Length: 117
Image (cartoon, rainbow, N blue to C red; front, side, top):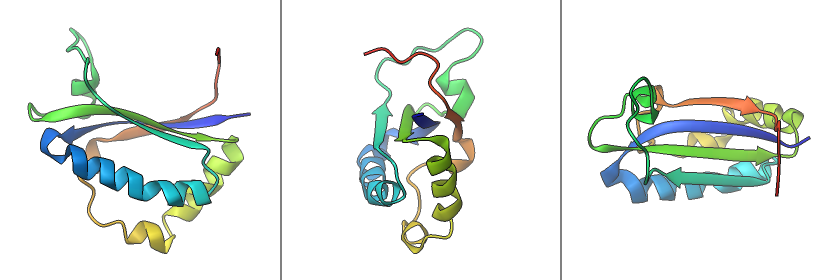
């Protein structure tokens, strides 16, 4: 069954292209490890909530934009194996500095509950 790894983070607005370049550079590694699809979404219509929101969740500053992204895997086994291999992969080690504060990024793995087309 298809499995998704989802991410939420905040990226400095001035780093939009750097982030896109970084994400594009990681795709061959994810693909080689079995990913089917990678989607990176730049926040455009992200309201500030009364109790919680993307800004609070990521501790975004005024100059940062919320991001929502996901990687689609054929199944959880493939995703788990990929993440285990990734941190030791020389291609991952050579990615350089991330264009965002990774300490404020959060992620998780998800199985589809409803999938309509």
